[in-house]
Length: 344
Length: 264
Image (cartoon, chains in turn green, cyan):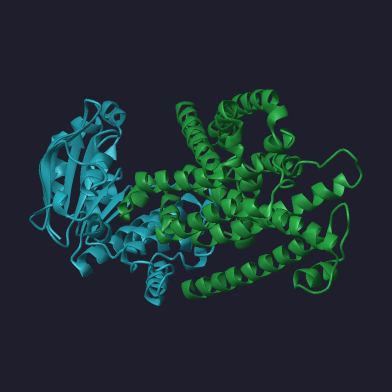
């Protein structure tokens, strides 16, 4: 019985990875061809394979490859941050955006920009500052959450308070700075990959890869599995509970901070990614859900980016931020989860 | 494994929860902790499980101070079942039981071995939960969950088995079955178990030794028939306890006080 269940789960996992990767690949190709100048998918692929194509097409494709890669990475990072945060708070409604971690990261970054606006171009520094902000947000929300009773909803409510405060602060600061910023400041508040260039990619890719490697090398997925059944259960299995939660919180903050520093605040992917992965797989085994969430988060972000570009086709006034699309889809999803008591 | 407690004390912010407790339990034996709510049963279990450290006194396992054991050694040796299982994130029964095998995995082993799965199969047959393995924990009845918790505790093949209220929420048949399994396990593997119980009826039937706790202190300790026939039990609980011989068993029955008044 146990053997069969384990085998079915393993097959299910492999099939889901295959299905989600194919979906992601398909979306990536669509993402390359959609935009103000449409390039048929096959032409886009031929062009990328160094076959004949015009210089303009090549230029446009170069930009689209960059933003598509950025969307994939940001989606993956936020979803993994979401799994980690949900794991250590044991709260199915937690997500870097809902808990105000993204807003705090941006607010602290904005304070730094007020001192020197060039910091945004120095990616390493910007990411470190955003990481500091994310950690601060994490600490504040969880402290208020614990003080207000430590229930699933009290954490979400304290997240709303922290998030409202710091997105307000960011808004004011970025408003004051807007003349000196290269891109519209809304892009940072609502997250956008429209300005992402090829040289920005490493600043997303390196934190993403490092975090995933660290996560598996430190055995955090298994530690989180044990922690799922209570602090005592985890510590009687030999896990150092404090160490696990602090490391996971740090990794989640790094992932959130890096994505905020490069593309701005994109909400709800950290909530939806883990839920989709649990719905597909049926349980919260973190060894599996981290991978599945990363893939579904990427797929979500790329889809949202495609939708944002499609909406832009009907306007002449610049691009719609990606975060707007994820909020419109994500908020009803949150409402649905609240009604169902947070279970997926 | 022989467990020995010497003058063990613990307090939560100056409130004494366990007060100078000394106990000895031999290999293959079951000790039951009984006592009113808040008498320190759970705290005592957590102390032996090394989840909390005693403020005073020493706990010995086979003569060796518990403090000197490595965290991974303890993880393999001791099982403590926490009756309050968080169930906010969905997880299946099999996932929960398999976490108990984590301490036995090699470094960088990510998935369960065949032996792990066979052990789960064996235990789930014993505890009659085979049909529940792929169900989610939040879909179980409290009686089913209780048996799953015990399966998870046994999945470590522990030398020391610490159970907190294993018979709560179970119906009469499973109360006996679960205690039978625990007793059989303890005898077969030379393990030692400490069980916190509310049900003095079950305690009188299954325990080798009963320790009666009141306000963190042991007020009576010995074979069930001795402890339950003493006046101390009646004083601690504030109810009458009768020992009745049924066949070869001596069973303790709590009786409400008002009956007494009716008779007189």
